[in-house]
Length: 228
Image (cartoon, rainbow, N blue to C red):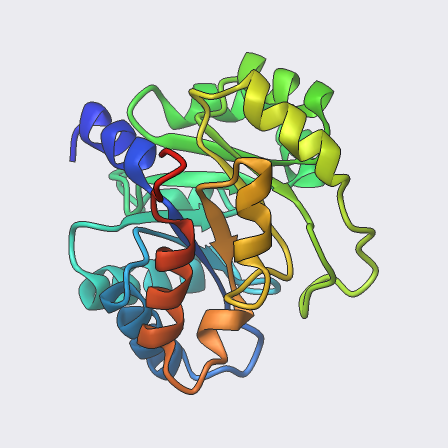
């Protein structure tokens, strides 16, 4: 996939799945769930494996790609080395760095330099100033949140929704994905803020029918009569 292909797909992506694998989880079972979610309309998947080593992350990237096929964007969380195989060939389409992880690498600009121009770089934000800094550091897209309490970050204070509205208006060309505690139960309410993209995790992965849950999220994020 070329850099232009990746960025075109990023620009059109509305539903971003945050696929968290906990230690001890069955990787094959989780990748099967991810595949069903992609069937329901997920266009972008982030692989999040806290506590795993680079070799495990590389292996999981291969498993996921085999299940989801070539079309969805596949992004590695935190581990820049796991973006590439041992020979330096990319295994995924990009990297997402949290605030602390970006700092540990010397900042987003340093991560961008190591990634090169062809792969995607995303980071976590919750203010306009952080978005400006992310763009200056070479980020192609950002997560904004957390918007509500999540199953992976229990001590999260919800981000300011008025700030989200201002950031969406100020950066209409930036793929900005509200994240954290989102799903079919609350995505509709975010449309009034101008939200047309979102990152969703447990509400899809833990659903009885991940395909239907993903489809419902996509429907709630799709263009309506009030515009794109």
